[in-house]
View 1 (tube, rainbow, N blue to C red):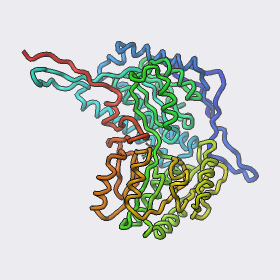
View 2 (view 1 turned 90 degrees about the vertical axis):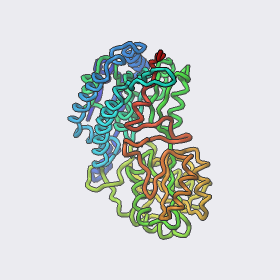
View 3 (view 1 turned 30 degrees about the vertical axis):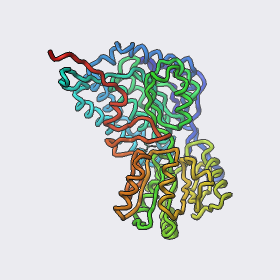
View 4 (view 1 turned 180 degrees about the horizontal axis):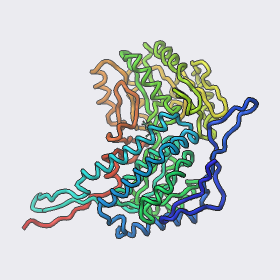
Length: 491
Ligand code: G3H
């Protein structure tokens, strides 16, 4: 049982003695007579008062851009982050174990999340060194000699989701810190205990007030911070609703820059000439890795009616081979779901789809056992059903038969979401045609491959309601800074 009572404000690790939030693991143990749920820890339920103290500490450390951190040389700031990542790596085993227990992510994926985050930080440091330490060379254009300098934005509020609680938040807060911003960081609702072994690492790696870490219920309390108008940049990965509820509280929206990763409904389009085996293996991984709880997951599959039977048979055969179990078991793919109420929501979507003519076509599909939800493949799905439009963020796979290429183009054009899509075809002309038709709809088109965020040097963003701004090793440093000009006349 991990009692995480510490929070970090102004360089001090404080101990909370007020009410705590119980962390219940989705992982349960069947003792033969009953299923025992594990209460594995607790975290502080801080109040508005502590949230505002954290904000004050970040505001004071920034000190209108005159503080030690925003004026520190980039070499020195890099040294702080290098120290941070060296110390963070020593906590790998504890963090990975906590990710498995708290969010049910399997061992290889939990390890990957940790390692990938460390690599991202190291690559970002390298990228910053290549940014001429933030200062460009002098240029002379139209008789004006100028140098561009990169400077921080101010105070950042960083929040992230439960599915990548480490990676999604650290890939915003570390670039924010590197560029000289000061930060208030609130870890996700689930996926928060892994912070316990990192609290001291944060405290010892940064000067007072540069990074402040708070815990609690979230939206309402974070709202108190936003409504002060003292946040300059809001980095948030989560739902549209969450982002806009918080953002709209800023009294001067024009002074707030946002870096947002939001809802997505990434489709796979399987054309009649697709290599079906490739389409099956990629869509299985794309729709069901980490039980479909990835913003980049394939959340709807369109298959041409001429190959639908073959595709469905191969897809469901392949799904039946996926091992389900506890996150630490060998080769396990389907694991318990951490979100309270998630299985109920997925069953609602299934019920709604059935009402409009879809069926679950795989054996055991939709069976629930405590926090397990056995993946359900729904077919034939159509636009009357909620699952056609809503982001399920879980192991329900809607498959839509289509006959005409215009149908898939229309789906993308009319969708409110625009993160990514996948096209499966062996016909390069058709692929080229679809790329041209769909390039203005999404942030990434994957050819004969599932959707995914990585490699992390590539831009990660989205169109429409799916994102604001771009993340990547290259883009994040730019997202958390602004270029200013120092210029003189060439007389
Ligand atoms: O949930 C969104 C993640 O950034 C997805 O990353 O595509 O590497 O799983 P991934």
